[in-house]
Image (tube, rainbow, N blue to C red; front, side, top):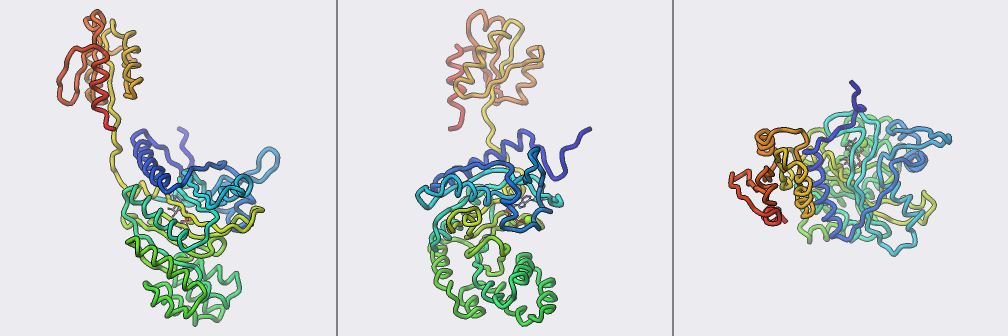
Length: 410
Ligand code: ATP
Ligand code: MG
């Protein structure tokens, strides 16, 4: 038997309905904030992703050569493609641009629960704004989206300036290494690394930085830094909006991308792969031939969100099963259409089962049975049976449709 590729999943209808219900909530919320959907290709030129991250990222990607000999990659993330699109299609549009996407990404990872080779992100890019308010909007929107999805999430908000300030004496490569350790909160790895380059003096300061939970604690570690005012203003907006979050200046998120405010969200009920969201302020457009436009955004890991939500049931659509004797089979199509035309799901028996077997199936799969026997066909009526209450009556088709329609939740 053929297997699906490692790290991918199949989704049966129940699961797809749950996913679509959550997705619809996210879209609806993002729309209310003025964000509009964009879509980019599943594959891009490899260079789009290596330009920023270097060749090292190739090991984590699905890379291939097309028939024209071009190096291509399945997208491992969607921010770079969106900014590429911005530069080529939309750079003259009035700013700021508020865009969102919901799409799949591909990474050659070691699969485990919450870590897949194909996974979906719901992401947002706010392009062309660089103020404490744009930083705050991204964070508040992320919180709103997670609430709309119904998952409790611990938001951690930080800024890269304090960490970069402490690391400024190191050469760039060493800074990147140190930040990679900090990103994983890996002080056991960081300590010997800094000792090895003669900078173990930084360890206690970086520890204090990662543990700072108030602005006073933060600036006690860093002293005066130019971003002090900006950080204070972001915090003021978040606090005035009663956001529940943790200040965390140990967030690193890698050197190659983010430039200022950074934030992450964690679902407390997930295990090792508990980060459901990551984002921050960044600059990318200039790498793709545009102006150096400041942007801010985040991506929610949709699959982790679904794992965190657990076994919630999506609202089920009202279903009508058309059950017919042999005489009613042809009329069944007409009757089903009348329900469908009113937006109601109606299914016909296609298996030549007798009426009893059809009714038994309907009792499991539907909310109403519409019975078409010899008598109904002869009189142009239907028998409508409410499968929950067991009540049934003979009525004209229109009345049956109206009665079921009245039961469809709005
Ligand atoms: P991690 O440290 O868990 O690998 P990341 O920093 O690589 O995450 P981002 O690139 O910021 O993740 O992607 C944003 C979100 O997408 C993550 O917070 C996570 O929820 C989700 N995500 C990332 N990689 C995967 C994956 N392989 N499978 C499922 N979800 C993923
Ligand atoms: Mg990763």
